[in-house]
Amino acid sequence: MTFPRPARRVLVAAASLTALLAAAACGGGGSSTPAGSSAPGVDFSKQGDTELWTGKDTSGNLKNVVAAFNAQHPAGKVIIHELPDNADQQRAQMIQNTQIKNPKMGILSTDVVWTSEFAAKGILVPLPADQFPTDGFLKPTVDSATYFNKVYAYPQSSDGGLLYYRKDLLDKYSLQPPTTFDEMKADCTKIKAGENNPKLECFAGQYNKYEGLTVNFAEAVNGAGGVIVGDDGKPNVNTPEAIKGLSTLADWFKDGTIPKGAITWQEEQGRIAFQAGNLIFHRNWGYVYNLAAKTDGSSKIVGKYAVAPLPGIAGPGVSSLGGHNQGIATNAENKGTAADFIKYFCSEEVMKANVIATSSSATREGIYSDPAVIKKFPYMPIQLKSIETAKPRPKAVEYGDVTLAIQDAAYGALQGQTQPDAAMASLQTKLQTLIK
Image 1 (tube, rainbow, N blue to C red):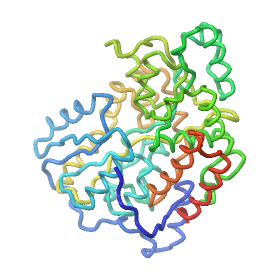
Image 2 (cartoon, rainbow, N blue to C red; image 1 turned 90 degrees about the vertical axis):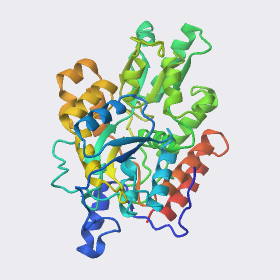
Image 3 (tube, rainbow, N blue to C red; image 1 turned 180 degrees about the vertical axis):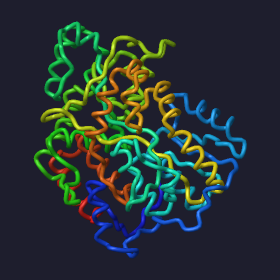
Image 4 (cartoon, rainbow, N blue to C red; image 1 turned 180 degrees about the horizontal axis):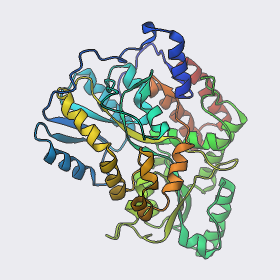
């Protein structure tokens, strides 16, 4: 699904939220406040039914959380409005329904990278600080929800990339989880030679032309020592390090280390392949852990897998920051019910229960050291470190144009249609026109 792009692209972007806030501070007063950053007269008390707009619930637990809230909240119920798997399609539908002022669209479960755009364009209203305190939340998750010193969405769930691996196979060949791509490829060579299984592939992440490709591209670039946007807020992808990151992925597609079919994979296709026993290594998010452990016949690797930090190309890997925040749509009719649900969902008690039920990654720091959570998910310290060291994707008001430019460059190189150095030179020029 696509939507019209503005003819004039004026972006407020930065490599980090710190740079963005610094720009706001330099403005010195009200004149620097962007559209949508204040919401005078917003009624956060009005009750009534409202819709939660969210991506597909692969965990199956969201309906339970909503049902529990509705049972305790007779003044207004939350109705799940499930969107497609594809993050780009989710974003497009939210923007389109803002344009038509849909009053039923109440709570938006937004990708962490949409905050700048959704705030600046007035899609979300800022949340009252007295009702939505951020004490106890991980700093990267609060940063991801903040625009010009205002919180526009409450941190719902966080994510740092993880390396899932076949522990049974690594143990069989006396191997340790790899810390670099070279080590991972060597492990695959040894395991595949020993197993002699034509269905067994080495590694895959998410490479279809959608937001997941932006994430995987950024991780390859960062893992090679490069950046997409520098600390000065300027694009910097036409570098030997960034080219090395993209070249490694392209070479792995070319020589079959990454299966060629993975060019069409999003999160779910990769998860299913890993659970079917067809991948030795798989890059994905925390939600996979719980699903791969199911004993209902959907997973062939129960008890055979484990989690490690992401490997990098020049050393240890660096995750892109993932996750979702919950905000209140500007045109929502019943903002009181929406606010009540967000506070309920993001409370310590409900968040902990949801983590235990789904292996999602919490935004509240204390949950990562909770004995019940650690007992069920011993990899949680790895997940916490992945989040704490993760790098945000470029924060831009017209993020859709930025991510599309990245996807175009990366996808062409992975398909062998463009040389990585040419792709990065072209991307550098494109981003310089988009990020000012």
